[in-house]
Figure: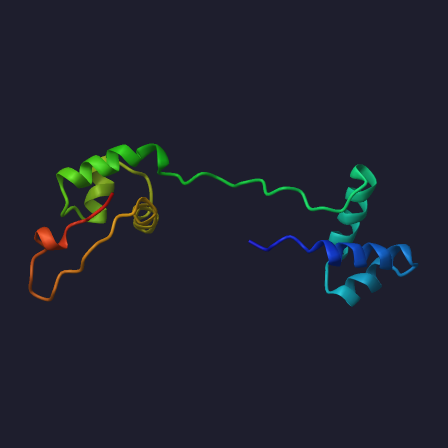
Length: 127
């Protein structure tokens, strides 16, 4: 996600626009888009200031409502594979989504050595 432009850049861009330069010239000079300049001018006219709007947040992770079920299943069945966990809990997600969610929950997995079966050492360990 791109970071908000600095206040210094915002002030310099607006000063250049008020100084008589065209939006296109200012955009090229400061390496910003023309639409950014138009939004900046509109924002200043509406609010009287230049600070960026606060971050809107974003979507919460999809599997958060299932955290308790996931933890409980892995406590009872520590050798469960990702595919088995997804199928058992009927989670409509890709395996990669489930993997990243387990990482967020703090679960770690130890790889099996070649020829070994995952026993208690290869199980999921989590909080």
